[in-house]
Length: 331
Image (cartoon, rainbow, N blue to C red):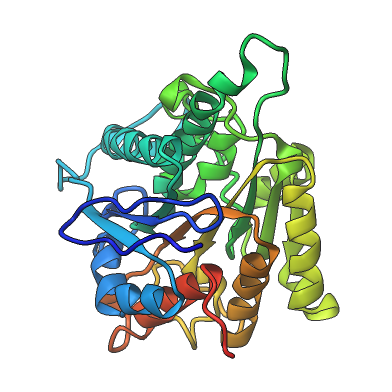
């Protein structure tokens, strides 16, 4: 059974098997080292996001963009370097409230950025929303907390903290933050920390890691698949294992996709491009397999920078990848 069509801005009736997709744009680039990625949500919409979601058979409501109140950059050091922390924190707090509300009403959050620091708000909203939604189910009985599994598709590990980050840019810290490492203002956003258990986190597509970050990944307990693993085993084999790892002990599955995981020949519009990334088909296959699993409950696309792009080819690719994750098939 599909949800009825959204009209006149009203939220459609949702069904457990095919929840309505709720789009939230986060036009923030203050967590990154280069400006421009704040225009990513517009690039995705111009790249045909709405049309591609319709082609995937998904009903959706676009809530527009969160207001980023301060365009200026400021620097705030917390136990090291955490650039623009107040701005990032305000934006992530606003995002967490939106995502929490969508989760509690049974919707599917689709967050489009913006730099990867916005995941701090996404994860806070997911974690708090999941726990609040299921409080009534427990009815005083002892029950394990609902867990979230995450597949993190990215060229980078994003497991830095202010103490280990060479740049101090918060877009390199969201995985560490979700695991409870870093500034308390970020780790405890929403009042819940940690947001994730390491064994439920799978990093896919790694190929550019900072020196201390490599050891942090090994010490953290997360699962990690590098581009070498993909080269040797193929994307299908890696993603099938990633999905199994992220869902075996969890009730929810979130996929966070950094467009820099794709090779810059296909996705030039991103600020931290590294050659040797996923091919066009590998990226689509990864998300087609996620869709086939039937376990996906939220999705995030980040780091599209139209200033660095070529005729919005990266925005169009990113919107197509979202459609693949949400069920668009070739046949």
